[in-house]
Length: 230
Image 1 (cartoon, rainbow, N blue to C red):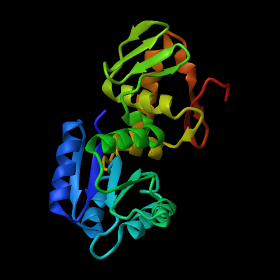
Image 2 (image 1 turned 180 degrees about the vertical axis):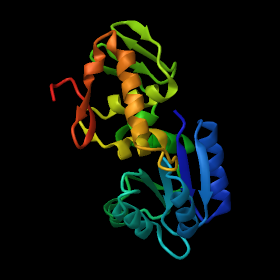
Image 3 (image 1 turned 90 degrees about the vertical axis):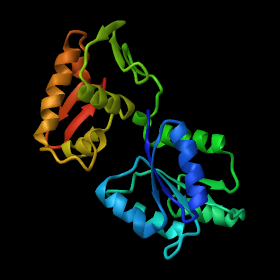
Image 4 (image 1 turned 90 degrees about the horizontal axis):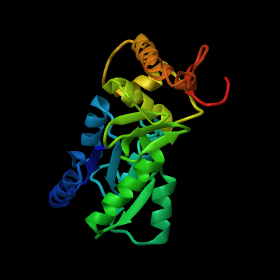
């Protein structure tokens, strides 16, 4: 699936090259020339992943990464650091400051796309095109189809995204506000009870196959996707 990638790089030629390669891979790209410019975008809408240059004007990349990790809202946004520094200690510093991966310039655009896919698979599996299965319940992001006991399930777009998130994050309790941020997007302002409406619809869709029991209500906390009795 396409991800929104924020490229923070002060060299316009490098930004353009990155944007061309990422967009050709199906991603949406937003560009920023400084940490301050990037903050304006992040305030309005969280990206799915950040490509962060080490040497930025004003605030260096590692310091900006550390700041993002300190904020609850941005703590889970994947970060790949881009740098011309080859020293091992610099690489360690970048990772310790919050980067998920580290690429030394110059690098292959194909390798960068592969690294992005790997980081998203680890940190945001709901954004990949990998087919996901939970017992006899199978979801295919590429064809946008769901199968239960080998039978195709008719499902709405919001319920599909909700199920995809649940299936890629099983056994965890998610509050309504967390589900709104992760499934609807943190820039979409809707009431938390909207989650309950779509949970009911999703359970209704899965009821015929008996998979509705996988979506558990955790009183006072939210919802959990689990095959274990709650």
